Length: 537
Image (cartoon, rainbow, N blue to C red; front, side, top):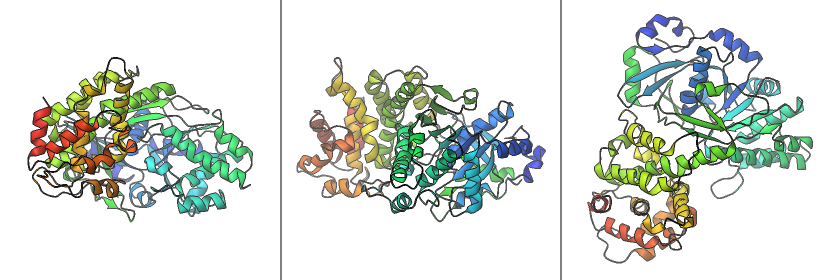
């Protein structure tokens, strides 16, 4: 069983093994997409293959859509060369359900795969052709939050951006430079309208894309490298829109246990590829069954009827409420709490943590008792039902191979939004008080304890990548288990850092509580567990 056009002609063999196959005429859809492409997506990673591509497949199967997806990869061209093209754009979606069942779907909605590479004349020329056409309605993105940044971690402009700003739109090297070059092609083709839709999991994602695009347009226009009208074009929402969106679907790295299932079925050539840029990609993607995508309905050239595929379209204010509901209360803080304590307590799977009475109670209390009182109901999703699904279906799913170590990545960048907003809401409330918060400060103390890189048995472990590790770890470097002296002055620079927590914990009156918890967690091996047992009641 080979995952390509020729191999999938043996439909009966695939279907006998339980695979759902595309039910549309792919040759016809490919031809129609070639002539009238409506949706191009940048970022050929797992979330796209598991979510957006599958939504389009379902709508093609139902006859609601007649064109497929074009995908472009602008960071790691090897994904296109070594994965998409050898498999003729097909991939396998393995949905891992909480009841232990598995759904296997061959997704064939991606009918054209291109490298967003200005040195690749053929592919870049085709991208310009797509962006020149009347039919194109939307360009969407899953390129991660850092993909929109024009500067490095120290705030210095990236060398590729500097070169592109100087040289103009002809042969850009930076990701956003290449995208803006394509927009300039669309402008020159008649100022044609388009929606530029970030679908990345970051706050106000449309604004991040807008800021990056307009930075190029302004600099290029000021230097005379593009026509003056181009800047006005990208800033006119009637021509180019940058909708906000909120996406939520867990798609962990392709797991060997899932690969084994597919191999047993007889699927060939499943070996993952690790590219020269260290991207890990396989012909299959494993994902949870739950998925949410809420998008601001701002499409100046119209849009496909994606609401029929389960996507939700609404106004910007509602997208903002949904995002805050998820990121600040109903999912992300719970994940971070489990990640921090999971690493210290030696867990390797997030799902296993939900069998731990203290950890289960910890996230239930943070979600329902401490977070829910300050959530603004967005209307399109019920916050309590969302938490119910998170705690009862999504996180406990034993078949989702997600790890606390992965989720602990970049925690210093996440605490301010995932917990700080709740603290600010308490501080601003007439009926609530920050002293009511007992377990959010426990998570803060747990994170500082995590920074020691020593687990609850007293053994060293490797911290997950985080841009602030070099800074914050110095404050706990001299602290050891069983430390008798007061540690507050050592960790004070962390506690008063508004960039980390969103607030100065001293100003908000929470520093003392965090210090107290932390002291208890460092009294010796087993102290983290003892502290959880004491306070998570």
